[in-house]
Image (cartoon, rainbow, N blue to C red; front, side):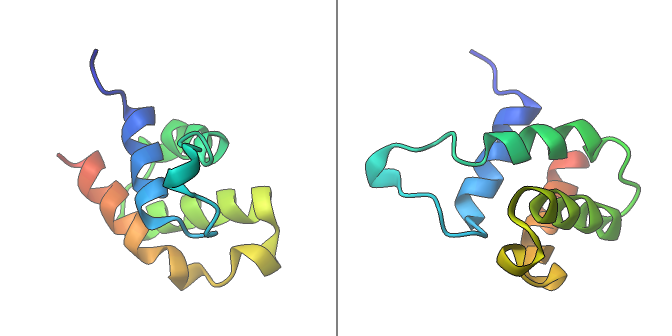
Length: 88
């Protein structure tokens, strides 16, 4: 089975777990799938790492609200990994 872009984005989100809702011992590996779908769909339009950061942050604000999502800078490591993925 090949790994899709969606799978890779979801793995990045799980690894970083920005909202701290992933508990591997419970097997909730689909926890960030809605956000991963939104991000994967928009990744091709990102022309910079900063654009990736905007996409990630806005998706998390959309799903969790600004108070839970936190600061935009919190998502910079995710954007960096997505940018690397997008250019690999």
